[in-house]
Image (cartoon, rainbow, N blue to C red; front, side):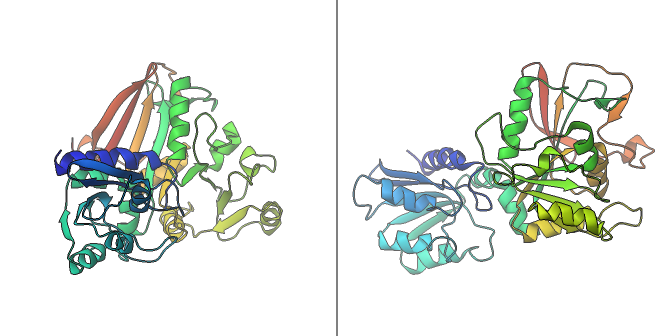
Length: 363
């Protein structure tokens, strides 16, 4: 097998950690000697052993003189676990093949340099694009200091996310709902506006599939959240953060905080809306590396207008409502030439629905 084939195997292993490793990246590792795979491993969960260590522990015998295939540069600093480069050196690896350089400034290139200084041959950049795509949330977070933001909503064929009365359950199919819960488990946080809480009273936990519950973020500029809202329950399994304006109602804030729920005050823009860039910056400081935005229209429109998102996932249901609520409101665009262009990344079906992954940019 070639280096590329062994790296593909490492990538397959790395994907098994999706939804569990954040804010760490997903990493897979394969140990090979004389064309035989001796050990395989991946980073299973944040705070636990890294992929290289699991591969060494999985090995059927000594790995001296073997080649290590790792999707991301081995760490060279002390974090939740000791540096992986130390274990690789101790194992007397003959060669280390790396998919992509770690963008973390604590590592970036240092792991490779240490291996080279100890006489271990390295090859960097094997299936690099695939390895970076695997950890796009982590790479964005490391490079910008802000979380990777995914906008997700379900709409009818005529572009409505709810009827004119605000009723929206359920536009998409049962398979699409399970898909939405899977997306929640793949992000550190899920964010909605107070309008969505008032209209739908969502729980925002991962229930229909297996996965880790995200932090539940409610954007509520004037603390209108009902005391019996479901997002305020089950704090033992899913934490909630209520984001409000700088002049918050002290009485209501105290009632919320007495239940163990944190409130976060952010500044307002000149139009009175909350400064969502400030919010995302604060979330980055808290090691929240990805956010799934599930609505409503006001929050989605604000993020689109400010360009504060990385991906849009739209679920199109084969239904027509006529008049109703649009996902994206007025952006002040009067000419087609000035519209925000997107390119499709993926298009697939969930039952009768069509799911579209899109990014900003010409197709």
